[in-house]
Image 1: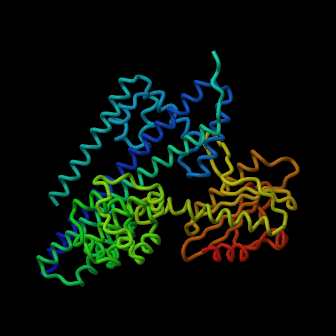
Image 2: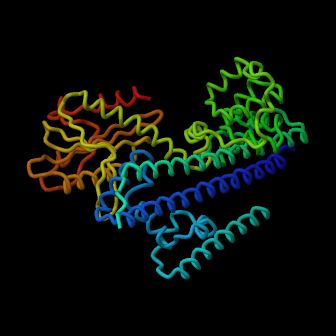
Image 3: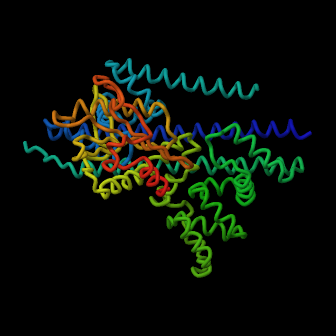
Length: 144
Length: 337
C-alpha cells in the first residue's frame, strides 16, 4: 500500500515548497520596496538640494544607465514613482512596517491618495487582507 | 547660501551601489530559503524511507510527481532529491540555518560529494563562507587538502559568521535554481544571455561592413508617457533607414510581430526624417533548441498606403547583399550558444 503514504508525503512536500516560495518572495519584495524608497529619497534630496531645473534630463540619463546595467525595473517612470513614494511616505519606520508588506505593484495604486491618513488606512487594510487570504489558504490546505 | 554643486557621477554610483546591495540581500534570502527547503525535503524523505522501508524507486516516483506539480522549478530531479536526502543526513537543521544555507546549493553538493567526514565538511563550509570561494576554487581547495595545510584551524572561525562575500552572492544571483524557485527563472536568465548576444550581434553587424552604423543599445523611446527600450538600433547608410533589432531568448511568439510593428511605427514617427526610407525590423529569437529570425519590412508586397509591417522569414531579393540573410543571422545565433 504505497499510494496513500506517498500521497501524504507529496502533499507535505507541496506545502513545504509553497511556503518556502512565499517566504522567499516576501523577502525579495520587501528588499525591492526598501530599495525603491531609498532610491526615491536619494533622488528627492539630490534634486531639492541642488534646485535642479534640468531634473527631467538627469532622470532620463540615470534611467538609461541603470536600465542598461540592471534591466527594466529602472525606467524613468519607475524612478519618478520611487521619488513620489518617498515624498509621500518619508518616514522609514512606516515604510519598514506597513509598506514593505505590499508588493511594489500595489504601491502606485495607493500613491494618488492625497490624504496621509487615508493612505495609511488603505495600506493597512491591504496588509490585513493579505494575512486573511494567507490564513484562509492555510486552513483550507489543512482541511484537504 | 552656496548651492551644493550637482555631482552626476556620484549620484549614479551611489544608486548602483544601493541596487547591488539590495540584490545581494535578496539573493541571500532566496538562496537561504531554497537550501532550507532542500534540507526539509531531504529530511521528510529520510523519515519516510526509514518508516516505510522504501527503496530508491520511490525517489524516482516522487521526482516525477513533484515535477508535474512544479513544472517551472528546476532541482526536482531524482539526482537532486538524492542530494537533498544526503544533505539532510549529513547536517543538523541548526548547522544548515547557521552555515550551509549561506552557500549556493551546488557548493553544498560539492562538499557532499568530495568529503565524507562531518568535521571536515563543516570546516570547508565555514571557510568557503568566510573567503567567498567560487565553486571551482572550493573544489581546488578540497583537492589540495587546504584543511591539512592550514592545520586544524577550525577554531579560527568566529561563531557568528561574517556576511557572505559579494562574489558568492553574485553566484547565487546567476544560479538558475534560485530564480526558477521564485518562478522568475526566465526573466533573469534572459538578461545575462541577452547582454552577451547583443554585444555579439552588434559586432557582427558592424564587421559585416555593409553599411550598418550603430545608434544605440537599450535605445530609449518615450511614447504616450511610457518608456520603451529598443534592444539595438542601427542606421543603414546605404538603405537610408533605421534598423531596429529585438532580441528574444524564447521561441518566436506571434505577439513579437505586433511589438515590432509598434516599434517601427514609433521610430518612423520620432526619428525618421524626410529623406529616410521606412525602417526595417529584425526579430531574433533564440532559445535552447531553436533559432528563429524574422525580418519586418513595411508593405513590400502590399499596395502603398498600408502602414503595417510584414514579418517574413525570407529576405527580398533586392535586399540580399545589403542586409545579412536570415540564414547568416541564424548561423550567428546558433554559433553563439
